[in-house]
Each structure stands twice: as structure tokens, then as C-alpha cells.
Amino acid sequence: MEVLLIICAALALFRLVVRMKLRNGADRQLPSGPPVAAPLPRLAFRPTWQYCGRASECPVPAGSHPWKDKTWSCAKCGKDASAKVDSYDELLTYRETFEPDPEKGWLVSSRLPDGRHAPAIDIDFPARLEWNGERYVLLLERPVSSEKLMFVQRVMMDADLTTYDSYERSERDLKSPPAGIIGDRAPDGHPCATFDLAVPARLIPSRTEGHFHLYLEKTLEWMDYERLLRAMTEAGFVEQGFYKMALRRGMTMLRKMD
Image 1 (tube, rainbow, N blue to C red):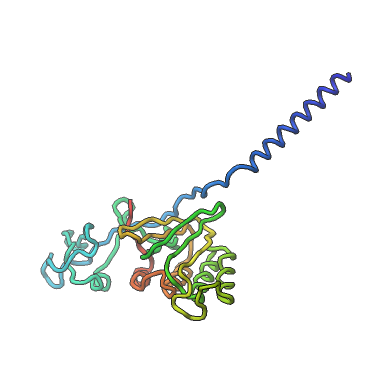
Image 2 (cartoon, rainbow, N blue to C red; image 1 turned 180 degrees about the vertical axis):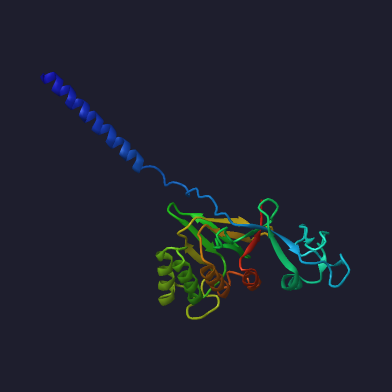
């Protein structure tokens, strides 16, 4: 009987030691990589023209193709209308139409099937997206004043795109700028901006070297998305033309890179 008790005690001790070793091994594992999250189902569009030419002639060769190697077609006659406009502004103001096309559409929009939006933003300057073991960190390499940076941080935090730490850091720098950082309303207060993202993100190089397409996998109402675009435009992170096109279209659009 005593031998049986000793064996049972030894087995219990052995199990306890094995369990502690497994737990310690798990604690010593390296931080996991970024979470794998499927991109939100943004709608793809194919641009068309409402008509060709400026009068009765169809088609009328004039100007140059605004999208370079892509093809436009006339929604009226079906003929190629790739070079029928003198300026891109004229195309946007009078003739631009879009057809949803999940297979051949080469413009990715921010619009989702339910009418809401998932940010798809054109970044026309160097940027980086890094994983710090806990979350994505977005670095936008463009000078910005503390006030404008703080406003962007506030808008992104209100939309649950960034963490409170990100906003708190901007607020702290505004009240007591780090050495070498210009405060007040200087246009070049910070040499770059850092955002601790609270959502999955993708930063894809565009066809222009040093430019990127930023995708944030978070659903927003158009009012909140427009507020984000406006704040980023005022801070210089988004070009005025891109913002104006977003207002005209009711969504943002980026060229597919695959």
C-alpha cells in the first residue's frame, strides 16, 4: 500500500513539473507576427464616359489618355474613348461615370456593399507601416505642425482607428515639444507623424516610386470618413485634388496594383 502511494505521489509530481515547463516555454516564445485579417470587400469600378467628343462627332481624337495604359469606353456607342478630353479636370467635371465591375474593375473604392466605407487613401510621399509586436504603427514622413497632427490624431481616435496613446503623445508634444521640434503653428513642426493603429492595415507601393496606397480595415460611415480625409488634407497628408475627387464621387478610389 505504501509503495502504491509513493508511485501515485511521484506521478503527480511529474505531471506538475511537466506542466510548469510547458507554461514557461510558452512565456518565452517570441512575439507573434501581425494578425491575418481578410481585407474588407471594397467595391471595384470600371470608368466609362457618358458620351464621346464634344458635339455630334463620335469618337473625336483630342488630348491625351488621363489614365495612361488603361482603356475608357463610351457608354453611348461602346467605342474606345481613351483620348477624347483636353484636361483631366474636364473629364472629372463633365464626363466621368463608373460601373461596378468585380472582375474587370481596376479602380478599388472605399465603398462597401452596405454603403459604408473602409479607408483607401493615396499617400504621395514616403511612408512606412511596421508591426511592433502588438499593433501596426504608421509613419508618415511629411512635416506637420503639432496642432494639425493632434487634430488628425483626435479624428482617428474618435473613429477607433488609433489608440489613445497615439493621441496622448501628440497632446504631450503640443504642450511641451521635444528638443528640436518647433511648436505653435509652424508648418514644419514635426519632421514626420506616427500613428499607433488599432486596426489591421496595408501599405502598398503605387506605380509612382515613393508613393503608397493605404488601406485601413475598419468600417466607417461616410460622414466620419469625410472628416478623416478633411483632417488629413489640412495636415498635408492627403493632396487637395484627391480630397476634392472624393467629395465629387462620394468615395475614394485607388488603382489596383495586382
